[in-house]
Amino acid sequence: MNNHRVLKPFNSFSIDVRARRVITAHTKTKLFKLWRQAADNATPALVLGSGSNVLFLENYVGTVLLNRIEGLTIEEHPDAWHLHVSAGEMWHDLVRTCLEQDMPGLENLALIPGCVGAAPIQNIGAYGVELRQFCNYVDVLQLVNGTLLRLNATECQFGYRDSVFKHVLRERYAIVAVGLRLAKAWQPVLTYGDLARLNPQRVTPRLIYDMVCTMRRTKIPDPIFQGNAGSFFKNPVVDALKATQLLSRYPDAPHYPQSEGRVKLAAGWLIDRCGLKGYRLGNAAVHDKQALVLVNVNNATGEDISALARYVRQQVAKRFGVWLEPEVRFIGAFGEVNAVKAIT
Ligand code: FAD
Ligand code: EPU
Image 1 (cartoon, helix red, strand yellow):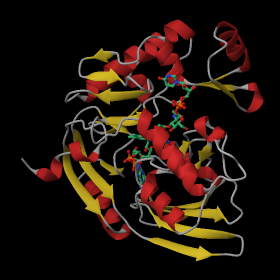
Image 2 (tube, rainbow, N blue to C red):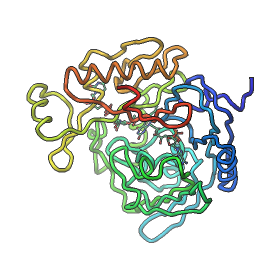
Image 3 (cartoon, rainbow, N blue to C red):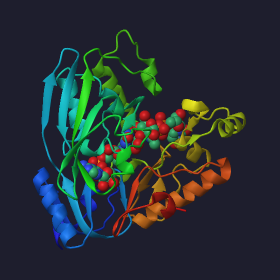
């Protein structure tokens, strides 16, 4: 067995698949060189962080490039700290470092797995905060010609679990660094869940950090013990008419008003209400504490997980008339495949 082909340690679902090659890149030059090599051999290449938002459906025929470019520089300005963080840094380590160095702001985003380089791709978010609130710029290596490009926050086109990196720039670029701005005038965000119980006058960044870590540990399974990729689906955003119909029938449904009368619903609640918490199909299951998380029960294959996702999606549509869309990125033999199509 060649260890440099095994992908199980590099995806949080712990799907046991292989790639033609799995190679670590610690520099931009190496990343570009490896990508060119793959292109010259007419084989696909996939840039990966820590694999916490992907589902491998089968063996990958190309080269997996693990982005491990490290480094953090901090500049102090009169009103803010400006951070330049390399893509291979771990997101949670960054949150902890900022907290320890009295640079608050990121505490609501504690314990989100993954590398900093992947954070802008789906504009990571939790507990009332999203990356876009801190993002100054994203540095991108264009893999076709090796040139660097800096995108400002507007150019990143951030949305809920969305950015330009999911669309226009797909598979032709690697994010190599992210610029963040942490304002010195700290504003606690206490809008979400148990955080609303904290006293805004007395709250500290550390208190928020601790509470977020506790809430996450009680609800979301740790991939080290049970393979998963966090929320499997995005929370659906429906139009005002659909929301009114649904809420008149289910007044207790959690919902979050968005712009233009649209309403975000809680996919976990919809799945839970279909009686699917803990539901098992093959070697995959709906988590028994958080229905939005699908878990690998016992050496599940990508097909086990996608079959369960298909079933869950159909049940939710049948009962509520809402079609869920995966948040997780599906990877087939030659690269990313359309996740919705894969489970339709
Ligand atoms: P990967 O899974 O390695 O990659 C994700 C996608 O980005 C892939 O398509 C990959 O090809 C691409 N990619 C990765 N790095 C680069 C790069 N440098 N350049 C170009 N493309 C790249 N997300 C949230 O938003 N909020 C949460 O609260 C949250 N909780 C989670 C809890 C658990 C237990 C788990 C397992 C996941 C959770 N997630 C959450 C999802 C996940 O943590 C994020 O999506 C994270 O940003 C993924 O980082 P990664 O390095 O693992 O990316
Ligand atoms: N709910 C249920 N049953 C469940 C799960 C949830 O009734 O099985 C209800 C909860 O009681 C709550 C509502 O649904 O009223 C929302 O649940 P929760 O607060 O757990 O958050 P979520 O909407 O399921 C989202 C993000 C998470 C993020 C949390 C906290 C998405 C797709 N998911 O989950 O992000 O950590 O909010 O902000 O937006 C991820 O993206 O991987 C992820 C974990």
